[in-house]
Length: 123
Image (cartoon, rainbow, N blue to C red):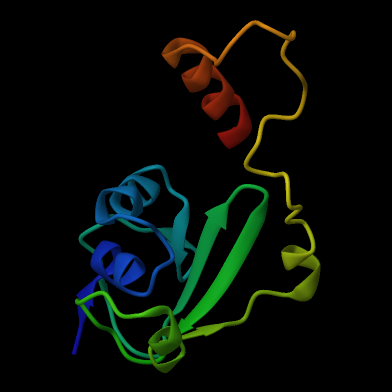
């Protein structure tokens, strides 16, 4: 059985939405066999998937492809995480917040500022 890579990445909870998985494929952040793949690429069991999520590069092995989203406890039946420990250690608890500070009383960032922050952090 084969399934689309964007559906698979969403189904095993690597991405929150299928459109986010599709966008990562389009940006070249999903690699199979040393080649950046399109969202429509079919994935089968035994393939090695490399997912680049700044600052970590994750490595997964497909056990069984699925199309329907599964609970977090069932993900291990469909996917094996082969990410080295030194890669996982790059994750720090405050990674999702902007490093730096805003002047007190300046309020929340505007939509434009938020986009600029996201673009800067995504690199």
